[in-house]
Length: 139
Image 1 (cartoon, rainbow, N blue to C red):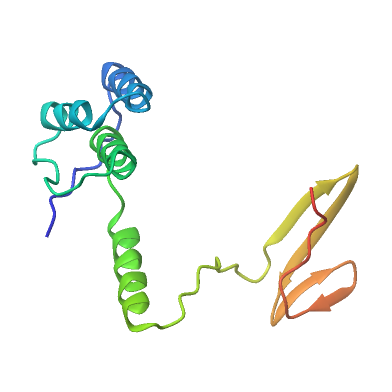
Image 2: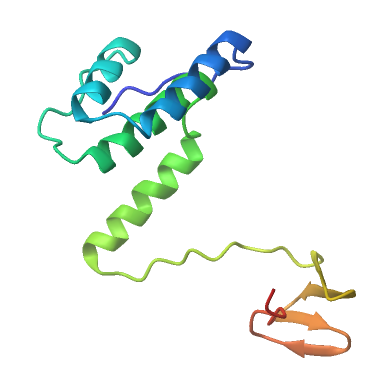
């Protein structure tokens, strides 16, 4: 199992500044420069077979951020493993958030406030009930 960086309770200002500078410089780095940065900042070696600068850039940025700000929670990692397992079997993956009954969704559009309540079996908006997601006006 890959090593997880511990969640930092409050990253030091110097760590945040170095992270910001590293992330900003990633956009102009070539593959060799990114590998050097990886070797300097991270405890594990970079993936040697990874030849795509775009993919390494995203992976390195994610790992640097996790080292300073903390990695994914155990719950998030578990959910990602479940999604991965479902996608391998061809099972449909549901990405919609779960909303509890009683939650009110609000959106202002062209000066009009729209409010939708989550009710048992669906949604309610201005005395109209539906079992489908509400249709917000386009921005």
